[in-house]
View 1 (spheres, rainbow, N blue to C red):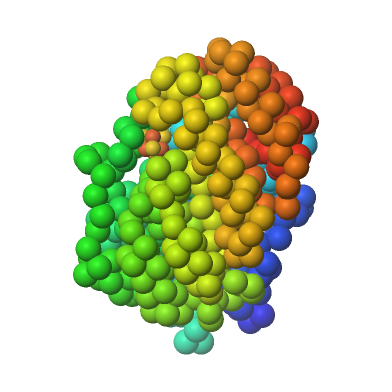
View 2: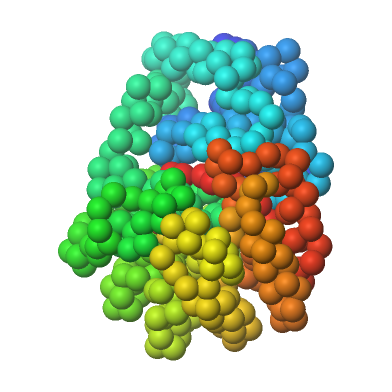
Length: 422
Ligand code: SF4
């Protein structure tokens, strides 16, 4: 580590955090941020000079375990520890990420609206101004240069930078697969397909227009622009997210070539994070059932650990109809069987699935999930089942009760899916 003290500002470079995305019940940081400690607050920045994480001392911050994170899409996520028993069992994380975007009855309060967050951000505004002055007075090149960068990245500039990322993608990512919580949602987005073939009535994450596939030219241009965008901070990433909601339907050649090109150009093998880089994507029931052995072989042989998440929603036909999901229940069961088969046979591919959850859903829906999961005997520690509370229709106590009943009946890992976007 390299430390500098400039008046009441402490600057720390080369803060080597965890490189394994490990989960801990106490605060850790991942990757290599630059830390600035100023007036009771602790700010972490990415290597481009963008605000990444905030916490503070006991006089200004509610709990030393909790932190506020800023995403590359410029959303704020509050990582809280209060109000939940057994959070790891619930969401596979010791901290509950609250983004305030997708309201859910699972949360009892909105920590993003409280005075501690507001004051920490106001203090950041003051810090960005103060850094302009301190940068001029710094005698060493390294802090001088970095403080200049941070000073230029005030809240307005951070919002503009997120806009630039969306322009590179030419779209947004309204939802990330649930497994991205395993890398703290730190993914580089690459759009292969847009729109949803199903346009399910219940879904809040569908994207506009008919389903369409981007051209190889467009994908190559995105990858080159992403390399420039992430710049010095690329080293802090080892995960690629193929968007939007059904990248698995992009077609074998396009999918495999895009993943390979991104691996090379983004230099993912040189990431600070150890282990195989991650490749995340969603698949629909149809694209997943259509995935050929050839495609699966090639994905399995890529230098990634590939995670495919498939929205099954329900094994019950009446429930599928009610959700406005244009699928036959037998296709859903077939997809579930294929998921187990791939998880058993493919070393570098893990397939997970989602079902909806809500207090006012038909008894047959939850019973069918319990029965099918209970008969599954081939759990191998991968291929989790995620339960997504239907937004706006549920009640915390009932949801948690249903979740626990399903979890207890399942040999497969079961978690709640908390929606996050990029
Ligand atoms: S549930 Fe999935 S397939 Fe259906 S509209 Fe939403 S994102 Fe598309």
